[in-house]
Image (cartoon, rainbow, N blue to C red; front, top):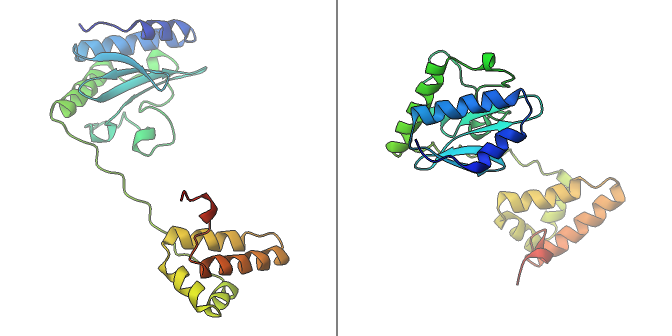
Length: 206
């Protein structure tokens, strides 16, 4: 069995009374299923590495969370695993809010997940890249477009901008709380674009 990290001993000792047996139990299963695992502390949580990120457990005031780095790649025919932060879920961990040992899946199920995760790292299987969010269509008000058309240089600059640079200008103008402020910002935007400047040009290092 790999050497245990004293920091995890301390982490467990500082946990709420209900959490201690859960954390100890999970720790024991991890070492049983993979004797070569390495203990560490990451992001202030008890973590376990094996040829890279592997799994982790965390103790909160009213529940314990436990999750696998590559949970989306694990075979889970009975649906024990939920989606943790790393896989787009809203909560940390893959086993939900664990408040007692009874909330955990059977030991053989957890051990199987741990062994599956080990094989993924042994085989150097990577998580698929996260899909890039789709860009929403940028809605440009007519008054903004008309102002651009009246200044050829500003229009050329705006059309050469990336989506994000265009959005910064449009958002800055349209989010003004009053008509007066909106028109003042629009005039400033046209002037800056005529000079070939992005919205936040003042913060660009020369």
